[in-house]
Amino acid sequence: MNPTPLSKRLSEIKTILILGLPIIIAQLSQTAIGFVDTLMAARVSAEDLAAVALGSSFWLPILLSMGGILMATTPLVAHHVGAGEEGETRVQFQQGQWIALCLTVVAIILLNNNTSLLEYMDIHGSLLIKTQAYLSALSWGVPAILFYQVIRSYCEGFGKTRPIMKIGILALLCNIPLNYIFIYGKLGLPAMGGVGCGWASAIVMWIMAIASSLYISKSELFKPIKLFNQWQNPQRKPLGSILRLGVPIGFTLLIEVSMFSVIALLVARLGEVVVAAHQITISFTGMVFMLPLSIAMAITIRVGQQLGAKNREGARFTATSGLLLTGSFSVISCSFMYLTATLIAQMYTPLTEVVTLASSLIVIAAIFQFSDAIQVVAAGALRGYKDTSVPLLVVFVAYWLIGLPSGYILGLTDLLVPAMGAAGFWYGLVIGLTIAAILLPWRLFRLAR
Image (cartoon, rainbow, N blue to C red; front, side, top):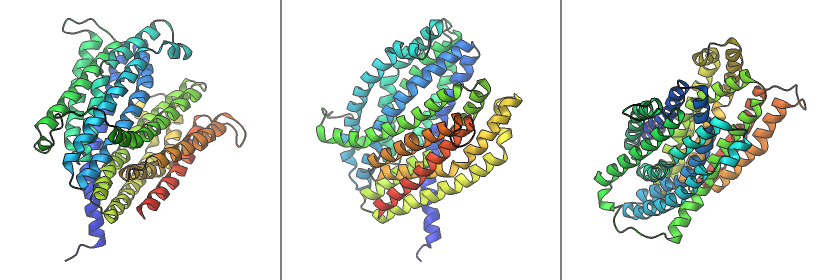
């Protein structure tokens, strides 16, 4: 008896969720690490909290964009796995590590040579010293986190997402006591305040790298591939394959992160209440975004493996199933945010002014849940098709040429309507994300045909 179209669809959605749920937990664990750093640094002083926040705004775009380059390992490996060529994946693993090594050098230089930029941002005195010390401490973990990113992307290419989830949980569990030791000065160490977060994070990065290395060296799946044997020197062709896919992914992530950073700077002039409400909205929507983002990563794996097996119909079916899944989820998240906006804001602060403004911004953010989910999943499917350059162009146009200018006009000028403040920027995001949610699926369906 042949399965019905509905049962086939539900089966594919189940497969995507089996791949995606561990990724969601891993992503939330990483988000929780940042939350714990902020919470524990805030208990020391406002200056220590500011040093961690400023340092994070500097290093996160750097490591996210570099990690994006290394994420190209996932679709490349997935194609080989789908084709039954698991042994060929050793090349991607080893060449990916060479790229990680080069990126490590660049990242360490940037994290330890930032005086001019920080002074340009009007950061001086003890805050400047603490921020630099935090970044310098964190830089010791850069080799480990980039090495780990290659291993993570490699494992995900095989569809092995549960080990990554376990390592993410391990990292969070280690981060809390390490923060306690370094921030407050325990076990004979001096109290370092916010700088201690940098040292704790660096150690956690090495724990993640060591744990993932032990996993792939002991796993029965990876033993026959001999990933650490017969290490090859850099090779032009495989390096080129990774960079052609990875550089656009890295720039796409950089465009997204930098846009939110620019909006935060532009909103800063509107006062503390506006900044606080804007930050609450970003914090909550960022957590909600983890689910469609994780599903997108699962779809990259699934589509890549289907195409490696020369199953173009299966790849198209996976992509459409993923779009249906995230579309359904976005309807739920949109409704939830719209109906509970005030309660969400009250979880963050008791201040009436902030709650009132934040709840209005959360209602606007609820509107773009559908667009945001569709565009990120379409981009994930396109990565499975090894298509990253066109999505980069779409994101640049949608965010920087349409979304951000629209937000600026609506938020800070009277050209179209009276200046709307922070709400104008969120409406600009709605416009930009809607454009991306139209163009990226159009590109996906064109490729799928």
